[in-house]
Length: 204
Picture 1 (cartoon, rainbow, N blue to C red):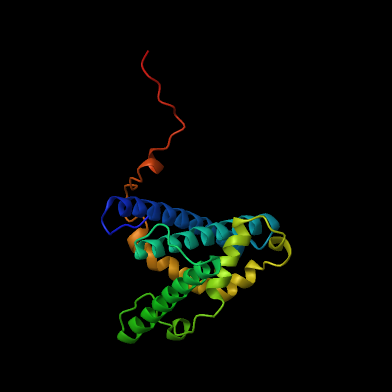
Picture 2: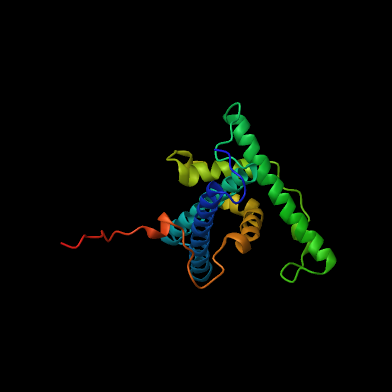
């Protein structure tokens, strides 16, 4: 469905984007906690299991959030493509473009002297790997989205992390200001935050 900025559909879409990003934040916070435990205590099967699960949840929600942002920019909740390959290509192009933009902004801020939390120019002045968005999608699908045998034998999340985490983290950090919870009061997410297992009972 097509929509415009500020209309009712856009309002609901923004609520869902906020929800998805808060899920992403939760997963990242869990990942940070377990990764810290791994660094301090050493690697063991259970901590690897929990760290893996948290990181793949983080990837999943970040990917879905970015796709939701693409839909909002297009003003259409259901973009029509000729086929699934065209849809995948459009999403991957969108992800790559945003990763390039963020890394370029860091470099420009360092050159201006206005990047207090980023001073290693070489870390940011890089070309986004050609397979980054494709691998992001495949790991999101196979590490958490679908039950596939490759998860146990061919999907090396350690290699993915080493190769791409700085781009993943840059995409995440870029969205915190607008979509993360910035206040002490938790946001109202309509039906999402209205959910309750406490069934209201009518007065008899």
